[in-house]
Amino acid sequence: MKKLVVLSGAGMSAESGISTFRDSGGLWDQYRVEDVATPEGWIRNPAMVLDFYAERRRQLLDVEPNEGHLGLARLESSFDVRIITQNIDNLHERAGSSHVLHLHGELTKVCSSCDANFILELPSEAPYIRLGDKCPLGGQLRPFIVWFGEAVPAIDDAVSITSQADIYAVIGTSLNVYPAAGLLNYVPRGVPIFLIDPKEVTTYLSENITFIRQPASTGVLELERLLLK
Image 1: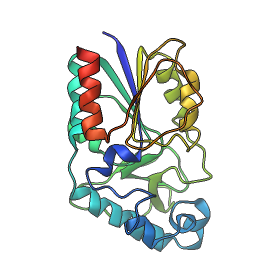
Image 2: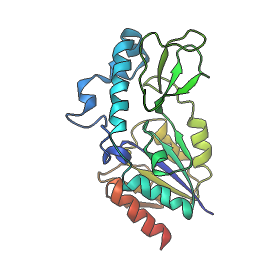
Image 3: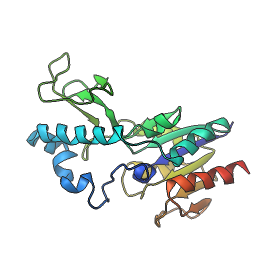
């Protein structure tokens, strides 16, 4: 079974109603990125950071996977599908995808400020943490998110997965955020690449790329058609 590796970004979940950095009038417009998505913001005002991610978890409870997520799950019947996502939502998993690597953390989990190995899945009925909620070692619990300026621990695993691809698809990402954008460097030579996005995405690669200028929901349907014909 051929290995289909997918790199997904914010555009993958936008059609489900998940706010992106670039949305006008969305959740991110109410906060500065420096205040809620950096270690410095956490140090300055941890209560505000906790409130921000609590609001994002509330949003996640109200949305569902779109046809793009569902289509990738369906492709598991014909391919060994491995998803590398820049998204922190759990819509790939809820759609039924079996192998999902989150580069930038997971919204439904928290970790310890003092112990990198302490990671806790929040129950859906109580998806909030507050100041004073601590790990067994006494460290304040924080969102399990890779903030701007922090290392991306999963990038080595993502490189390994990418280097094994027989087919590579990029869905809903501008390829402007590193190190995720650099994963294209590790796609094996000659492997076909499908780039799904309604907007023009600039890439330094010129060979073996099929551009599907559609949003994720219809773009993945087109990908299914091309791969299964």
